[in-house]
Length: 117
Image 1 (cartoon, rainbow, N blue to C red):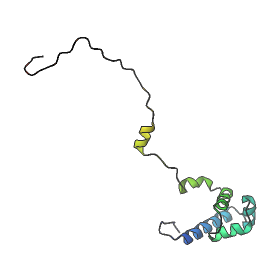
Image 2 (image 1 turned 30 degrees about the vertical axis):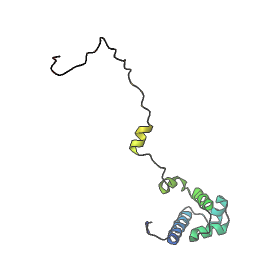
Image 3 (image 1 turned 120 degrees about the horizontal axis):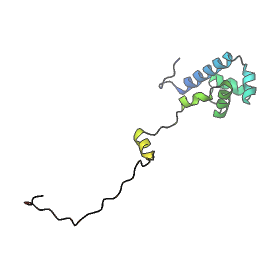
Image 4 (image 1 turned 45 degrees about the vertical axis):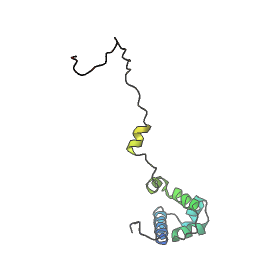
């Protein structure tokens, strides 16, 4: 089942639990072995796989570490990217060349209509 935005939180927790159980089985781990490697109790792993909301986020993270899923958290919660305009503003532009100031060589005369240049 594909995760969609209109799914209930209970259904989402159950789906996540099912996926974790499937990954655990594909790595040939028992719930007990996974709990030991994650430093959790067996009941915590069981509740997590059942999609029960009473599990703590830290337990979820530990199970994901054992199953090798931590790298995928970037997809789950991507790092905020600055807009292209903000990136340009943040970028320090190094000067490529210098520019000398022009000095006035003579007194300037105010121009008026009817004068020729």
